[in-house]
Length: 90
Image 1 (cartoon, one colour):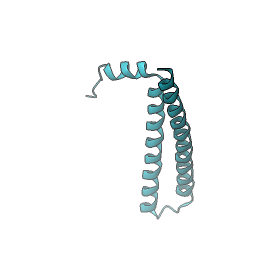
Image 2: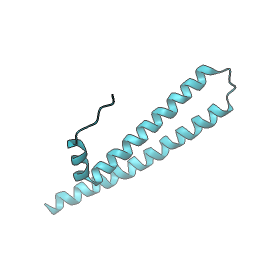
Image 3: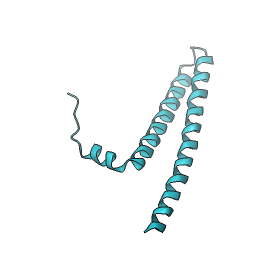
Image 4: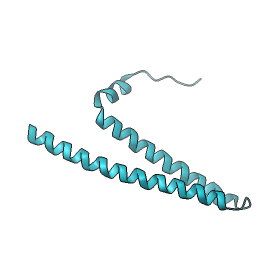
């Protein structure tokens, strides 16, 4: 049992490091896209729109990774959140 827990801990630790590295890379992508958007002339609307999509996508992926990491660290909190009734927008 302890051996299995130790292996699981090692896997989670490696995944956590990889997630942190991936999040750092996504933040760099967002920063570079923002800089590029600021430098583009206003006439290049299509390029600006594509950069906005890149920024949004990188932010979404980074947030999803952070949330997954939090759920792994606190499984009982994640289970409660999943069981809680969700409010719908009206």
